[in-house]
Image (cartoon, rainbow, N blue to C red; front, top):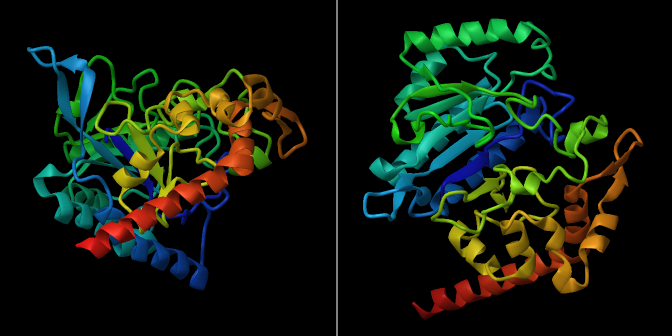
Length: 364
């Protein structure tokens, strides 16, 4: 895989109004212990069922003989907030260590996201000791309380001073290749060992300024995406999710192991990594017209096999947001089709996978 985006916890110290999932929020007491415990239980199986080979072929970068270069993939670990005391040592560090145990020298590039406001010198030392390659400071926008206007620049200055002390280099931000790692076009950081850090946030020049139609962003009527905004065709969308082994391949994982073709998350997961290998899940979806449409970044065509023309899909993409405002986006049509058709399709494909797996196991 070129990239896997794994949300390891819902726990966060913030409850931002633009967040794409209501589950990202502060938790306390028994509820906090429960969500951390659930993530701990799932983590080892998820690591076990990640791809054996975390490299990919990049046809945009060729060897002297004209063949695609083989490059090292990325595993991006995020929350919530992974540096919270309740998350960092009980869950985040053990996850990093489990990945290193499994892959050793063949481990993917380890990346992480944090809001940055609770990053301390000791944490940075511990992150570098555990092989973190890139630290993404993901709060550089006006939606995070305390970051409005020029306030965010004070955090950036503090982070830059801290990173300089440990030789962590700031990576320039590219136009729109990867909203989490933001590799620049003028320098190929993917071939360098780092460590690096980047800043990004929910603003047009740094990330998706339109905001995804999900969670509190949806409830608060903040998404500005219209029907022409196709998140599926962007890096964080479904485009290329089936093409593991090649550039552009990425999936998203939730704390319980649920797998999705996009960071926004479809209305039903593709499978669960506590049960099965990721590659088996993806292979079972290849050739199905709906999932191939998502793989092409063309959700509007996903329902044609079931009688949903493009015009029907567009009609089903109309709704109202949490404030009652009219809203139309392809993600809404995708949601409707998943709820009406693909949820049961995925259940049957999963049943067939598990049955085949049981048969193979019984024959050994």
